[in-house]
Amino acid sequence: MNKLITIERHFVEEQKRSPHATGELTDLLYDVAFAAKLVRREVVRAGLVDILGMAGTTNVQGEEVKKLDLFANEKIISAIGQHGRFAIMGSEENEGTIVPPKNESGKYVLLFDPLDGSSNIDVNVSVGTIFSIYRLTGDNPQKADINDCLQKGLQQVAAGYVIYGSSVVMVYSSGHGVHGFTYDPTIGEFLLSHENITTPKRGKYYSINEGSWQQLHDPTINYINYLKEEDEETGRPYSTRYIGSLVADFHRNLLTGGVFVYPATKKHPNGKLRLMYEANPLAFICEQAGGRATDGKERILDINPTELHQRTPLYIGSENDVRIAEEFEQGKR
Picture (tube, rainbow, N blue to C red):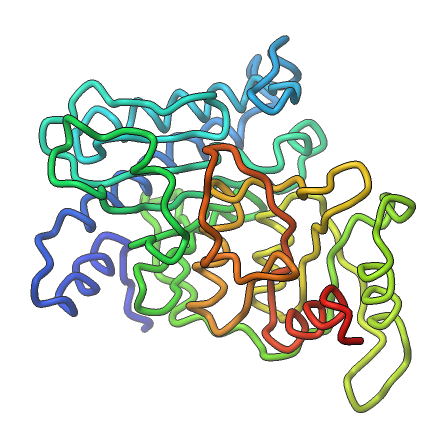
């Protein structure tokens, strides 16, 4: 009989690997897992309650907000913020930072995208939650401010995502590999299902919105055409797989190998994905699994952020595939 390992037990075992660990990070991660359960409960029955469709508002990026976006955002803030373990938080749905009501002892920062891919909710396509955790830059939680949020991705102490699909899976890393847990609704627990995830060095899929072909710059077009060419030695042509939900596309490529491309375009010269809420946490996960993440010129985790809602191009996935993408973007091919 297979040994059942709950996510809480796994967090505790990971904590034991660090002799100076206080248990705070373990508590933080369990808070995130609990919040994910709340969001999952509503996502799986969204069609039965009045939370489908638009909320009639726009977020800080000027995008229409889904009702479930708002619900997920509120649930995560309330479930996590009430314990006082985070001194400051930032959400893709909020223009500024969020200071939890109890921040007397919190020494960490939480940045999150409450419901990535929410445009797919109404058609029953996988969506997800993305999160990253940083330490405060100072020692006084009462003085936490936006500068604590604007840290390089390299300074993350943990990151992860939850994908709400045919099953609900939480994937995370605290710097010691990448691990995945599948939610068992019969017992209400996340159970270890993907231990020490390693992504292939070279993939067989590419993920890009080819509907924006006319908006792409020549280096990106040349790279995608390269992936479509026939070459037995390098396993080309690659197959295209694009869901339009970042978490779902990334999760598939992480497990099976491939590259996700959301480049700079003529319409969005700085890219469209959010550095702090999407690119950094997924880049952290990807590198821990042996992959690579870049904006085409620079490693994602090395980018020095200047804005809470900063945008970036993103090439992420199997190391060899991303390196070749960089060569095209940098004019080396």
